[in-house]
Length: 413
Ligand code: ATP
Ligand code: MG
Image (tube, rainbow, N blue to C red):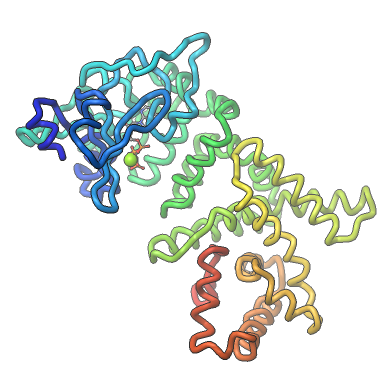
């Protein structure tokens, strides 16, 4: 594909995370291509392509199951975040109108990227690396350095602060001092980032195998409280240390599951992160409004979930099951046999059980309670209506794929 562009007389380079990962000796996730051909020219060259993006059009070229993104060099006049997936969420610099499709030279394209290690171009014509910002040296030193003046670049696009935390965590790079220094002071700019864009960043931070490292970096840089204000408050006055332990165990478990290529869901992560804030508000509501424990928990889960979604737009397909997982907790604390079967059949039982295991692990509930439900499931598995099927356990597993994301019984300690 690079050669097709080249043979047609265009410059074509591999760029971005793929080149960076190769040079770091890591397995690249995907490759992006940068070219001086306009999207329309790319479109004309590849019948298997289509143009996407409203503000910054680029071409997606399909190869079997893979889609390669081909972007035309952008000019430096374009200062806000303008990556394809962010195309709908461009942050304007105050008063600045971002013009459409401001194409530029390769050097301009390099300068408007975020970090030096992300601005390396691999030229297939002669296998050379084009480096306009010192990215090769930074890869050698394992340094993550923002291109240009850090404060200005964070103001242009505050998500770059999150990207700094994420890439440092994911790639185990040191953030250059001048790149890190302004972050805590500017962290509140995150509050103005559209919640939908923060959900995308949340997925990259917490669902791609380096959640615990990301979390620690975000805390170090005072960014975490802007993504999860309620959680951060719960962690700040976590006198018994249990919520901290719960959160860290869940993050570590999720990383382990990703490493083992087992399914995960953001729904579970949100349930864990919001668990303490919900519990706390439920206690207040129960006292104030004389609600039953279950009613208070339901009201608190709705309220905290709605507060959280002002920061991070959690799609309802995750936020509703998340509330179920939270609301099931008191029902799991009840062992009356008539109810047990009903709870076991609940669509979110597995995820709720996973949260219960974590709570037992950090000493919030008796270990016997977790064991009770472990045993109850095994029994139910034997006599479930599905036992006529050849592999009832398999089925159970599959349901879990969509739902849960906690530690499997076998891996929970
Ligand atoms: P990953 O390996 O996690 O995908 P990445 O660096 O490839 O990391 P992408 O979001 O895929 O991240 O972005 C591709 C490239 O676009 C980056 O390497 C960088 O050059 C540029 N880029 C992405 N986001 C920004 C931003 N907010 N500001 C400037 N440049 C950006
Ligand atoms: Mg990428």
